[in-house]
Length: 328
Image (cartoon, rainbow, N blue to C red; front, side):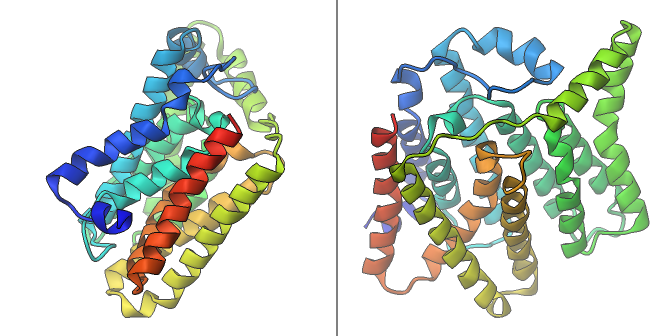
């Protein structure tokens, strides 16, 4: 009932989906939270100078900003799916699933640098998707890497997503020596501009030290309970089964759709592998959810038994709401 109702592109559903996203974010406006922004780690100067003064001292603006970022990022993912026909029916389902996957834990919902990086990275991916088939793709590679670099000025560990950009370029048949060089230069360009700014004020060494400190910093680990561990196990099961379904059905899809689905599967694998390292933790959830939202939506659409599909979708919704109440 719920999946069938929401899996269409009608005007009421288009307006209803952001409302549902806001309801899943409502506790950020009401809960008693000590810190409204960020993780307990060093912050990049761009975050410290602009975001912290504006939002660190007030709950409502910080919660509203994180909600707007998650909806905007989800809309970007949804736009990629719709534009390249990754689902049989156009709908706002990828956006809703993206919000669901990020709505369980307050540290993820909280306004933090990863959200800004995730937004710019999805724009970068969309730029590469849009350039598929162009004879000269080097400008697109530069633009995508530059968007990633801008996001990395907020979350410097985003520079480790350059290989993911190269994977996207390879799958889309855009990889070349010029494309790789353009990507490296594009990623470096925002940092060069920032370094020049701090150099003018004799703070270039401090800027470099901030980058080093942010790269090696550990964001800390979330203190899981049996409930949060059970929820994460459930979500991992959803993601793994959905990825297996997508891989199994790749040969049944159009060639272009196969490539796009491979990209989202690779994004899940790449972000998942980074999460297992000591330098990354729960802050990677928005990036994992970017690929997972598309693959899970693809999986739901392929389920032929309507009752079973509705049951799984209801489990996803109710489990997220339940963990919000339990872990609040």
